[in-house]
Image (cartoon, rainbow, N blue to C red):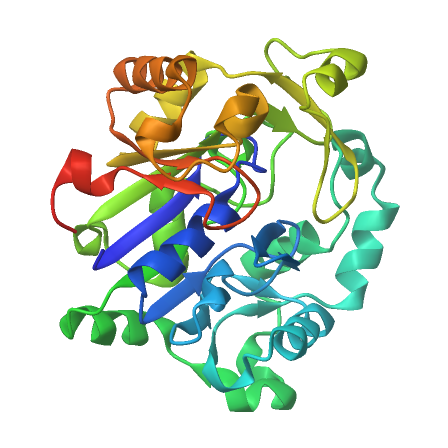
Length: 338
């Protein structure tokens, strides 16, 4: 920080919610901005409670952090108001006036679309709403009276916070290989998910960014169709503890071993200054719950060092369990004072 961008280096499901939640607790950003839409869910576990957020930033865990939804994001009113109520954050939420709104007709259109069904779309109305936005017929947040108490200009809020030297976090969704432009087209989402596009959704120029944290999981997962190099059979994935279900759809995620070549490309395209790796406790059960480098098993440390050497970017954050604070933070050791 002052401005840190968190984005995904795989097919989504990398644990960005956990990393963002940890950074919110440890760094106390004064503002956190969520991009993307409700087809991407982030799971946050803290003090025994599990939260699944689809609309608001995972930084909600820090009661002093203001929460914002970017201009390039898409809202669905029922999801938005449900999360605001459940998390009790009404007084600190801002929605950009130009954020788009998903309507029931968008959901219905996607559920009837046989092409999207074959691709494995979440059928949440996101793609249909994005198409309407491109055609300039999508209704925006400022047109909905019920959103009036939350409306603002998020790009201005970011600039003001940065001018005051306050830490700001931008939370991207999904992962590079689901990017409309840089992913495994047509088995992708309806937007670009690279770091540059995430910043564009917020209205922040790249020179304002101090750190880009690209998040990987210790293995690959994806839902829906499309290629997955080294894909494991379901039985093998289950045996290895890699069998998971998606936050939004509940679908079983396909799994594969960590792919260095794909990770290198994600580091390059996103211009990563730091790398975070989650789910180390799945690959190395002895790492479960560790919060210090010296508490990790030797084979875990050796693997992390190897990944860092292969990617050419410092691996600074290691997830060792679901709990947000089950994180090994190496930023000071590798980067100096924060």
